[in-house]
Length: 392
Ligand SMILES: [Zn+2]
Image 1 (cartoon, rainbow, N blue to C red):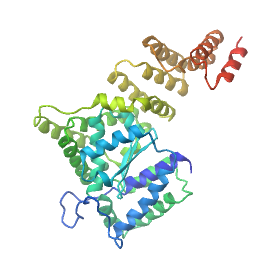
Image 2: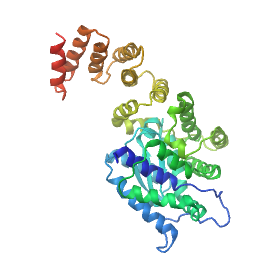
Image 3: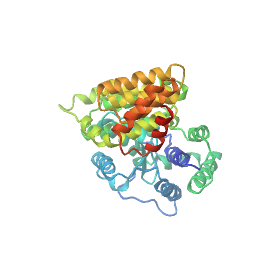
Image 4: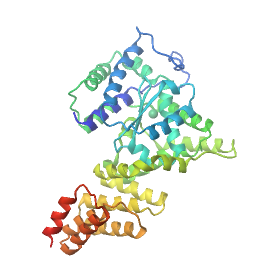
C-alpha cells in the first residue's frame, strides 16, 4: 500500500469513527470527555481507543507527517488557546497530502491535511476547523456511533477495516475508500453540534466569527465550480449543506456585535505557512484535479493580489494538463509571473519544456540556458545541458 493510500485509510477510519446521531444533551448519550480521561479498560470505548492507537502508530511512520517544529508549534498553540483544558489530550498531525481534510479519532489523534492548510485564508478559519474537530472528541461521537452500530453488519465492516489499516495489505482505491467512509457519514445533528461547538470555541477565543462560514463557503464554491471531479474527501465524510453555512452566518451576525475587535490572524497564518506553500502548491497542481485546482488558484490570485508564484503554478497546471492551447496558456501565465518579478526559478525550465512542445527550438534553448544561469547548482544540470546541446 503506498503512502497516500495508507493516509486515506487512516483518515477515513478516523473520520468514520466520528459519526453519531445524538444531538446535544440527548438523554443516554455519554458525558463529555473530561480532561485527562481514559476509558475504563473493560469498556467498548477502550477497544475503540486501542484500534485507533494502532492506526495512529501507522500514521506516525507513514512518512507523510510534516515534522517541522515551527509549524507544529503554531498549530498546537491554536489548539491550546481554543481549549487549554483538553489540549494536553490532543495530538495534532499535519499530514502532507494535497486534499482538503481534517479528522479526529476518539483517542485524541487529530489530522489536518496540507490541502486544508493551503486553502485556509487566515488563523481564524483554521481555528474554526480545529474547534469543529475537537468537538467530535469532546462529545465522544465515536462512542455514540459505536453504540448505534455495534449490533449491525456495519460494525463488522468497521473492525475489518480498522484491522486492515492497522496492519498491512489494504488495497482499496480512492473511490472504494470514499464509499466506505460514507457508511459512517455524519448525521446532520452531529455536524450541527460540531459546527455549533466549533463556532462557540473559536468566538470565545476571540477569532472573527464570520470566518467559520467563510472556509466552508469557499470550499463549496470550489466544488460546485469544479464539478464532480473536484469533490473533496472532506465532503465525502462531512456532508456540508448551504443550510449549515447559512446557520454559521446567522450565528456570526449575532456574535459579531458582542466585541469591538476580533482576531483574523491573516498575517500570522501566512507567515507560519509561507515556507511550505510553494511545495503545497506544487502538490496541488500535480494531484491531477485540474478543474478544481484552477478554481482554487484563481481564488488565490484574487485573495493574495497578483502573485508571481500563483501565476507560475497556473502555468504549471496548463503545462501538466496538456490539452488544446495549453502550451499557449502556460506561456501566458509564465509571462505574467516573470513580469511580476521573483517567480520560482524553475519557471525557465518549464518555459523550455513548453517551447520545445511548441516546436520553438531557439526559445527552448534560451529558456533552458536561463534556467542554468539562475540555478548554477541545479541538480538536473546534466540533463538540461544535454537538451541544450541537442537543440543547437
Ligand atoms: Zn465534522
